Image (tube, rainbow, N blue to C red; front, top):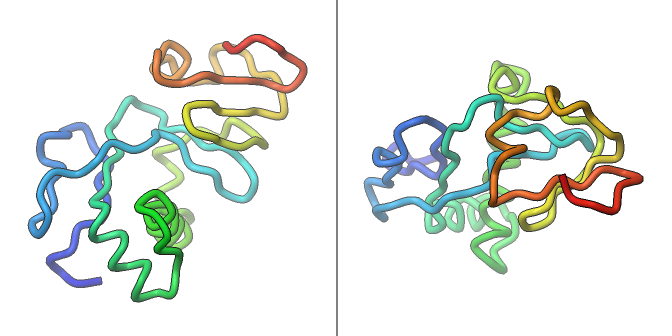
Length: 137
């Protein structure tokens, strides 16, 4: 990666989430899927990305460039693959097997309320759907 390129930001100061080359970054989901499990950030921190930098990285690595979202997901996957076992996982809680589509988190197993971070459970932006339930939590 170019030293001037800043494709991702994870932190508590979203105003500092700017790319030196392209400006303000875009808000992204506070969850990631890894090894078939859904992982949510343990604290309500901001996840942002620079779409242009992610597209550049996707082009350079032969990843998907059909949309900014595809490029972000490829960029996020590179970060997770490279850093997950080197400490990145400390920032996340494992919600179990599941998937994420748009603003809905689908979990294969029902969890107790205290197993889901408060900010995510109380968010108006996210719906949590568990196996066997017809209502969103």
